[in-house]
Length: 395
Ligand code: ADP
Image 1 (cartoon, rainbow, N blue to C red):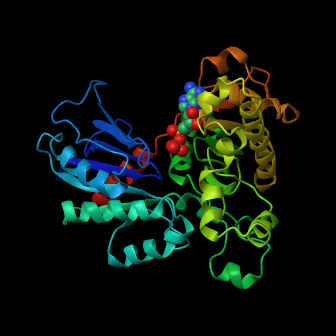
Image 2 (cartoon, rainbow, N blue to C red):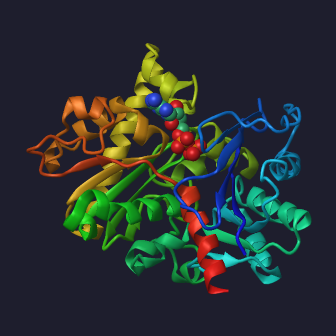
């Protein structure tokens, strides 16, 4: 039956949505938008595929106290009035943690929900919102199939050496391993590589997903071989508010000598660290870049330096580097950050063409660069829409 797919991406402070024609292209949404700033200053925005404003009915008023569940409950009926009477034939969700259970998009059923609940403590700022969105849709359209698409699934092609920690093996056996995240974004970039890299698409490629959450993934054959995020989405690169790599001894010190509780430590690591913590100003890279506050500059410099050291640490997993790709909010839009990261990688043979970088061209490396360096916009919604289509085709 033809109609539309709805994709929902419930993040820590935002809910993004997109509507696709079930028999149309998955790279172009008919309608998409988001409610950002949930918990602080929520704001709704949406645009139609024509690029024009979306008119039919205004979105209900939002306040600081409007939580994720309330936003979803406003969003679903609002969407209903913008579908021109077309049925929603499937709803796809970005779900952050699939643990070891889910290696591919999965039709939601009771046993799947139990697994998602079980994994919630591993992604405390995201998974509960993903679960809430699935429940809200089940109430809205009980008979519509819902497909969970996991940020961890893309990484299940990693070798055991990339997965396990140097902890007692009982813990690895219990699932305390590196999972990796941003898999929907990496999946989309992997699917785009042949168009941009030709023969090198299946070579040794590192993709840097630099947004408010940031990570990197090393690929060969367009499959994940290693990633910087681990058991949770805290590990690896410095991020907007998350610390990235941290000596675990710091946590012991904070608990034992400073008397911090687990909840306080969670808030510190997930919400008060990274660009925000080091700058003392904001987690917003666009603001930090132009700030003359020395702490803001130090935060930017640390972000770039840590990105380069993390990238270097991924190289043994793929035995070299044939191409580097930048994506996501910072990776796609900040020429300065790309240049600063690449300045730490000249020893690898990375050399940018400043004009191409400034213009955010697809290929930003100089003609004589040993490592082609590209900017490819990511599209997580397209991957979720493709999973909806695959489900309907196969069912
Ligand atoms: P999320 O992880 O929430 O999906 P995004 O991928 O949207 O995050 O990235 C958000 C980040 O991208 C913010 O730090 C924002 O400042 C940054 N960003 C967006 N546009 C620009 C720009 N033109 N220059 C620098 N940074 C930018």
